[in-house]
Image 1 (tube, rainbow, N blue to C red):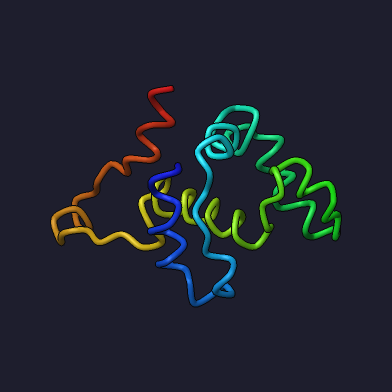
Image 2 (tube, rainbow, N blue to C red; image 1 turned 135 degrees about the horizontal axis):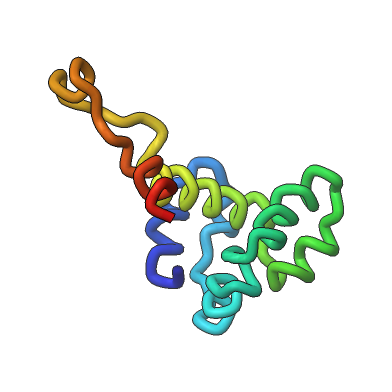
Length: 111
């Protein structure tokens, strides 16, 4: 997470103030990238619920002082680009005509 953080934020930089694009400390990345951080389903849910309910102190306490708009944008990036394979997918004509197996659905079926 630490090594991917700045390139992703720089890609998303038009959405942020310049002071928001800062490096992530190693210790903080270890905690945030663990199952007590954003890999925890409850914490990931709270990351999006706290800002919606304007519970800023709870957010900064849970996510070690991170700004909600920066961390949540990064989490959306991870969900869309890394897990789902992007917002859109391109397929060859053969796949569209004769069918294909979606990798995400195949992964769920195997579990």
